[in-house]
Length: 561
Ligand code: ATP
Ligand code: MG
Image (cartoon, rainbow, N blue to C red; front, side, top):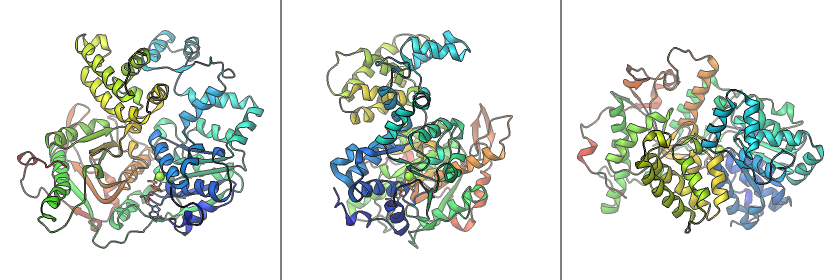
């Protein structure tokens, strides 16, 4: 635990300090990537509790993923010590679940209600046909709720019960929302119920990183915050501490044509003159692009084992890059396969996560169901997950794929790999683990300490940072993504550009952009051109990388750490 009190704000810059130490009332922190929004948020909570005598149990911090919530919790623990446990840190789903559990009766649910799993949803869908009302009724008849209802049902209960609203407003009189640009209408309504218009609601975000409109998120809630919450204090943070100056300059140019922030400013705090430019690799094919990633990973990490042998690389530079420092980002999950294969062949460990719901991943529902019914299993939760996987993989290798709903043993093993870090973090709490399987995203199961290269969809990468980032598939039609036979409207293109911006700004020290001249798209091998987003970036910030030496990664075994 750090020293609480006077020193608490020392690690913030002047504007961050203004935000962290502001008095109560509505506050909007508008700031670009890497400006320390999340850092400011944790310091604000710590400051309020340590200096202004706000009770930690009065604080509710809301994030978008369980992974982000855990990170927030860890940072608060570091700042506040054990009392940090009294702060409620939640995702919208887990917050909704808490409110529903406390008010099951009012919501028309039995105390023992559960979130429907995949199979149950499919069965009920089939039975209900296209009739939504029947769907909800059938769910209720089986004491189930659907994931989407975790926010909408609490909203309905609160709307009908002003006394209950008052109780929650008393309980959580300080509310903080990170990534506010991605709230949707129902989440917004829940916030309006939980916080009065002049309440201590602190919303933090960046409209230029709004990337979830396909799930109903609506950046206009961010833009009209000051109308909905009266006398809102507005704080802007403009110093970026994350990225090297060339990376930041390139990213700012890339977003400029669509920026939603008037007078957007982002100044680099890092002025290292030696910083490498943004690498740009035009690949001849998807295989060539994957080779480029492997070659570069080898070059960067290879230096480490060199160093341990002779305290320096052949070129005299020292490298401290490890696999855990490296992320490969892409627009669509399908792009991961050739890169995962190439990294595997080179002996590089990987962890791959998307932004999709965990329960939508093949194998996860089967494991969840088996765990729920197998009370007799002993051992740690992680061990039980592995054992269950083993049993299911054996069982699923015997029947036809038809009988298993298309799920094979490989799906089961890959689900076990994803679920294991999550299970470890849940200790022995099976209900908590099952709750996370029902509500969480794949990226929640990211293991930040894993000594592996991380592969993520751009959506899943939000809020994260890595010393080395590859942004692959920078091609027209892929980023911006376009479906055959359709044209994107301006707003869709703008959102794709924001995704490009989010991807670029995950990088701290090195950023590589690559595109391929050919790619299999919608079942056809197609010619591809680079994304038009690249043309917004000054050529002087880009370093064109060629196929340097004809060295093939498979000729050389990658040295593992
Ligand atoms: P994003 O929009 O991507 O979520 P963010 O604004 O939340 O970004 P943070 O993740 O809080 O940014 O901070 C980015 C990085 O900058 C982190 O590594 C953080 O520790 C560092 N940082 C933030 N503020 C400072 C500061 N005042 N001094 C030194 N480092 C800082
Ligand atoms: Mg953040």
